[in-house]
Every structure is written in structure tokens, then in C-alpha cells.
Amino acid sequence: MRKLAVITAFGGINPAGRSSGHHAFRRLVLDELTSAQQQQTLNSLAQLMGLEQTPDDAALRQQILNGTLVRGWDNVSWDANAAPFHEAFKDEHGHQCWRESHKRLAVQSAGQTPKGFDPAALYRSRHHPRGLQMAVYAASDALGQLGMDWDTLRNHLKPDEIGVYAGSAMGQLDHEGHGGMLQSALYGKRVSSKQCAMGLSEMPADFINAYVLGNLGSTGTMVGACATFLYNLKTAMNDIQSGRRRLVIVGNAESPLTPEIVEGYSAMTALVTEQNLRDLDGLSSDQTPDFRRASRPFGYNGGFTISESAQYFVLTDDELAVELGLSIYGAVGDIFVNADGYKKSISNPGVGNYLTMGKAMGEARRLIGEDALRNGSFVHAHGSSTPQNRTTESHIFSELAKAFTIRNWPVTAVKAHLGHSIAAASADQLLMTLGTWAHGMIPGITTTSEIADDVYQDGLNILLQHTPVNAEKMPLAFINAKGFGGNNASGFMISPQQTHKLLASKYKGQQWKDYLARNEFIQQAAQEYDEGVISGQHQPRYVFGEGVLEAEDLQISDTEIRIKGWDKPVIL
Picture 1 (cartoon, rainbow, N blue to C red):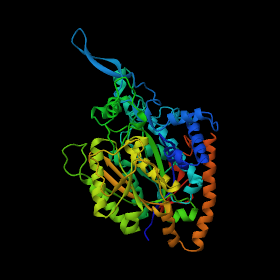
Picture 2: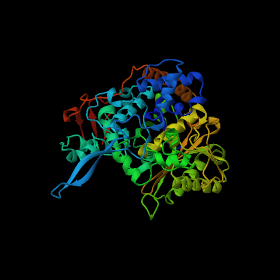
Picture 3: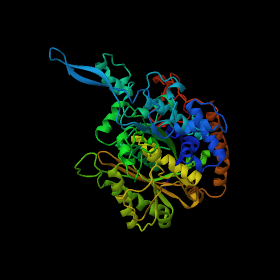
Picture 4: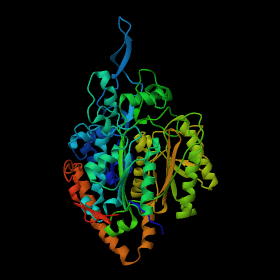
């Protein structure tokens, strides 16, 4: 049996809340949960939003619900009714000049982190762009869910057996990043020494290495527009399967909620506007649309809803997970990437996604079996909520369902609830996939009242309601991502239940029993972390100015390099 890249922890933040403990997933399906689970998740959200946790308070519950998921603008530092912009004019001498003006944005909704959530207030975040603040929070959350102290865990490994692959597609374009650097001349201000560096796309990896992990191993990001997370996940999986790395932290942090980025996508007619929503619902100009339903994958829609998210996943090889007793939340089966070939428009979808999905389905069948593919799999679609996506992506799924003789294939799209977080979008999809296996529920596209006439449905069951499933009989999930420029990626994930079956046959008898016994302590520690966060006891891990290594901290020979603070050497 080949090495499996197993998911041993995850953490982050998106419009549904904190990722660890499946709290973000629970927010999506809140009404389907037990009363105890609902209250725990509401308490988790209250802590994020700076609200007093009061049990059975209907007003507080409604405040939390109103301040999460896709909604009208309410958690940004600028006013969408008076967004600043510079307009050109000529003075009395005919010279070109600029002056600041303000306007109401046509786009009045977005997927925003819970109202009141401010990662900058949780650690020493001076001059950090918001995307990097979210990255620190998200990576720290993943480490908390590990159930083992990071410094203890890393000393089971050589320094170069660890990797971090994370990034953003847009970079950091707010004032503290490249946005402020480019705007400085217009505002008559000086460029800071931090804006250029902190705006780079790979900073969500660099920041984690330098201030959260102290990582000395592999690092980087592979950017592929809206497929970026799956590109990084593929790199992580390849490293683990090849044996080059034993532990990889993979993720993305994207916070594109600035007026300039919103206007940029709006100029492409890619985003759903306030007027689009009125037209869809037959409202008059003085009626306010239901912004909660702004994103409507596979329904009658008018564009995608931009969002922010930061998600990090800890992957290890299966041997390390079993050795240390780490929890196994699933495994990465395989991921495939294909371009579109010649294109008539850089933003138009092409044929590459047929190849990625087809190869993912074929490999899943080979690895897990025909019956699992036909009767035990579901799809997390890219589901961007654009008229073009609803036809092209549904055609891909329908044609491949027919080719593999799949009937009634469950398809969902969580952008209905979270919006489109660009590079982190497929990380949101993976997060919600793990939630399905933990809670036996596929989140439905509840913002869509009916499937559009031009959506292909042969062989598909596009879920418009939250749908209970038996996780034991649902071993496979497919995650699909389509990005501008012809960046297509599709992967299949293996459920924790199926992963346990595979590993129980590999690590037989007492070895597997010992793993299960060790895992009880790991689960207890993760639970204690979760309870501590809800009660406000935990802050993000941010290590600044400590443990900085210099040349004198190395012991160098022609066979190895030993590093201060690490038990094991780097072998040359």
C-alpha cells in the first residue's frame, strides 16, 4: 500500500466562523444539529464576534446569525456607500490633476468573517495586512486542533522533513500591502518599508514559517487563480507520498475585500450587483434585496459573491500519524491539474476541467473501487454562481456521470453560504467535506430556490437542501476548482472512516490498537483546546524575536548539519 497523506488537523476562519472543531461547518447546517451542538457553535461565534455568551438568548442568536455567512457589508473598515476613488480633472492651466471623491458601490454584499471579528486585536499585528493576520489566526487554530504541542511534534522529525505550502492569488492589496504601496503617491504619502514585501503572494507561507512554526524545511506556493489551494495541496501530497516530507502544512489566506478589488471584478461583470439581485427577484429600485441569497450556484444568478477566508491543514504520512496517535480526519486521494489549451478569453472556461475530473474519478475507482465511486461519492462543485459556470460545470459532471454510469450523483456548492474566497475557495470546500463525514450531512444550496433551465442534470442530484448521509457508506468526495486563465484542478478525498479501514489492514493487531489508545489522549487535548478558545483563554501563536537562529547555532560537517533547538540533524 502506498503512503497516504492523511489530514491530522485543520484550522482557520471564514464567514461561517472558526474552522477547528467543525464549528464553521456547523454554522452552515445549524438547524440540523442537536440543541447542545447548536449552543456550542453559537458560543464559538459569540467569542469571535466579541459578544457575551448568554445561553438561550433568542436576540443574541439572531444577532449571531445575521452577522455571519454572505450578507451586506458590515465587517470592513471602509464604507461601501461612500467608497473612495480618485477622479481625473484638469486645472485652469490644462494640467492633469487628481482629486478624491466617493461613490456607492454597485456590489453591496460579500462573504465576510463574522461581524466584529478582528484578528489584529488578538496578537502583535502592527503593519500586517489583513490576509496575513488571518493566516496567523488560521495556522494557530490548526496547531491547536493537533492535540500535541508543536515543539514536541517537530522534534520527532528532521528539520527538512517539514514543509509549508500556502499563498494567496491576489496577494495583499490592502493599505498595509501592495495596495498602500501603489496608492502612496496619489495620497502624498511615503511608501513604508513593509508594504512591498508583505504584499507578496507567498507571504501566507512565509509568515507562518517565521512567526508561527519556526520552519526550516520546504516552503512556497503554487498559484493558480481560484484553484490555488488544490495546487498547493497536490504539492504537499506529492512530497509526502515521495517521502521527501513527513509533515506538511498546506493552506491559503485570501482577504480581497477592498473597494479596488471589488470594483475590478465588478468591471468584468463577474460579481453580482445589488441591481442584479433586484432584477432576479423582481424587486423595485427602493426595495432591498436579500443579500443572504446573493450567491446562488446552479440557480438563476447574476455573478459570484466575493469573500475572505484563511484555511490551513496539517498533513502527515500515515506512519507518523499512527506512531504519534494523531487524529485522522481523512486522506488526500489524488489531485489532477490541466490547462484549457487555446482560449478565446482568458476568463472563459475551457475543456481542461473535463480532464481533471475524469482523471480524478478514474483514479478513485482504481483505489477505492467501482461501488464507492458509483454509490458512495459526492461532489463539492466550484459552483461560483455565475450564469456561465452553472452550464459549463454541470455539463462536465453530467457527461462524466454518464461515462462512469453514475445515477443521482449528489452535487453541492458551499459558495452559496460562504461566497468565493478566490485562492482559498477549494480549502473552504475541503473543510466542509470533512464536516460532512463528521456530522453525516451534506450542506445544500439553500440559497437557490430552483435549478436554472440551462443546467445539465442527467445523472446528477443537485442538492438544494441539507441532506443527511451515512458517512460509513460515503467514502469518497470530489472537490472541483476552476480558475481564470485555464487553471483547473480536481481531487478526491477519502473519508476518515475509509482511511481507518485502509490503515487498520496495514498496521495490524496490537500496532493499530496502540494507535487508537494514543489517539484518545490526542482527542482529549484537542477538545480542551476547543473549549479554551470558546471561553477566550487561547490567543494565536505568534513568536516574534524568539529562537532566531544565527550561523553559530549550526554544527556543520560533511555528512550533516545540526541546528540548535532541533533534536535531529539535516542529513547531507
